Length: 264
View 1 (tube, rainbow, N blue to C red):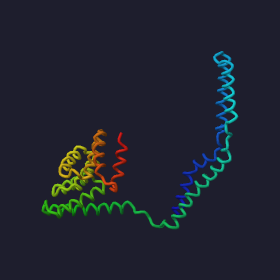
View 2 (tube, rainbow, N blue to C red):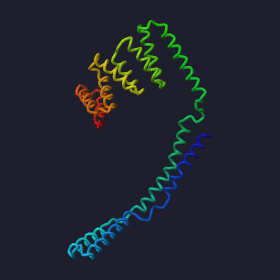
View 3 (cartoon, rainbow, N blue to C red):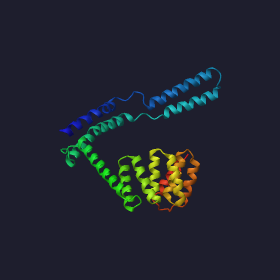
View 4 (cartoon, helix red, strand yellow):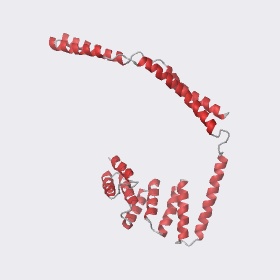
């Protein structure tokens, strides 16, 4: 059964960590390290005193202080606790995969096979065919009609969701050409930024802000472009002005505050 194989593989993967936990700890603990340091300090004091670089009073006071630290050094108490901790961790290492497999068998569907690559490829082909049909219909519509605008908007969202940013940017450009709108402009600016075309993003952002200077999303993107261009002071100025105009309960206010805090 496949889940039993998963359990065996998990145990094999965790075995090196388990062996590490079972390995005996090194002999030198914190207490012994402290004592070694203090012994070295005492030896150094004796050398300084013997060489005449420290008088008797200073030598006696310093030696007494080091001896006091030796007596006050806490003894190691990690032996038994470390053994118990290692045992607990060892149990957890093997119980967690076993419990996970048990829960999967109980609540999951181990008998259901994963979707093979052929099925995923067929689904992608169907999506391509649907988008091709949409493009064909758009070519027959009046270019400036509301139907064409909605069609290009649908196509742009579909292409962006599939990771085809260039095709998505082309579709949103057509939407914006039919009727300018700050929200669509912001979508296209973000696409340009994701594509790495900051020049196109900056040009579109400037034109859009002239039409909608108070749009918060466009103002935020303006600061983002300034920050990415290596101009943090400009970004700070833009975002601080936006923050001053942002209501206290605005959902984007925490994001804006984090961005401001992250500026150098």
